Length: 167
Image (cartoon, rainbow, N blue to C red; front, side, top):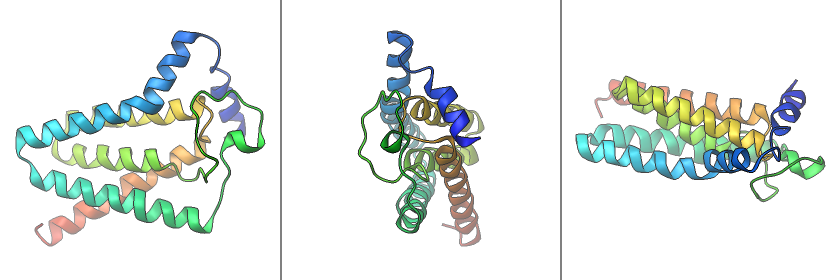
């Protein structure tokens, strides 16, 4: 099912220049916009607690859990062993779980704890980013799902710990 869904979504790549540009935007450049918007919200609200919990959640999900899984389990990226349409270039490192998904779903979850509406916007953007990275040929669907679960759980755990110890 993972491969079937990948091939279906990847079949949209290369159909139209405008669609490819949109996929590249969501899969690559949306990340920078989300980080900038997040920092603007933090600075505007002077919400240093949200900044701390976000930093800890992102660190845990992206740099600890994701890298630990990749150290013990290697899943090649779709373009390594398959003939696909690849829109975004990437090195042939392990693809599971998606570091982008872990990072941005953790960020979305923390924002959701503090600002429900902004959190939902970030969740939609994280999902669009993940889908675009599948269509672009650099992630399997399971990579995005795994990264999303790791990111959401990491944010939940850090938030729970911060509440327990009044950080």
